[in-house]
Length: 322
Image (cartoon, rainbow, N blue to C red; front, side, top):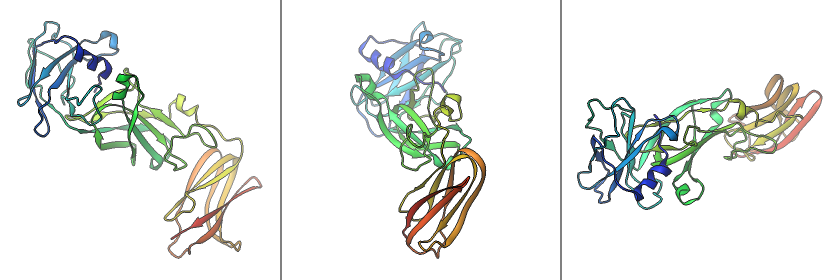
């Protein structure tokens, strides 16, 4: 489902009204008293070939009608609606889209284009990523502040558990999104330093802007394995070891930077006794993430994680706290 350029649409609020032979009703949460804006736009490839129309819908019925000779048979149309709390609107203002978008008009008239408005909506899609999905996270940003010349504001961060994902309770409104593989577990998208994590922004013909609200889940897809993303992932030149979190409790992540040699990883107590051989890898160049889950009988204390690659030894002291 394609989305709208919310900046151009909301700018039309200050211009004259349009009309057309598209009719429907808004289903609005609660008992609102504010005016709703209803938008019709031509499904498009670029903004240059798009026609926009808008009208108002008033409480308590919230019926709307367009009657315009430029709304023609044979074109794909989309309808969405918004009840703004101000200008710019706020994230979470009631918004929604017709679940049958895009649709076509036959005989010049169509009715029953009803739109459900909601303060929260769903987002779903697919992430193409050859790495482990258990490190994926998504940030969704509110794009309404851009109307006043500001930057996007973070709505929240979601943990992505599967490559085919579905998120609920996303505040309604104009959004953008970023997905990244949080390999070091610091909840930040790291693009410099020891590790530059794979990431991708949601992209479309509207600079990545999409609309969340009632009526239907928004579909957004990402490709973390695309060439422009892979170029940002630094191939390590040296063998490296990093353990986090530290101290750890239920589990610890061990990030290894491989330099083209096989690697052995083990954990030792303070007396030098091997507690467990954690992993033994084939030769590789790049980053490899290993999870260590302590046994139930491992006592609280300080331990040594040791990795050996091509005769080079890397160690890190870690603290286990039950």
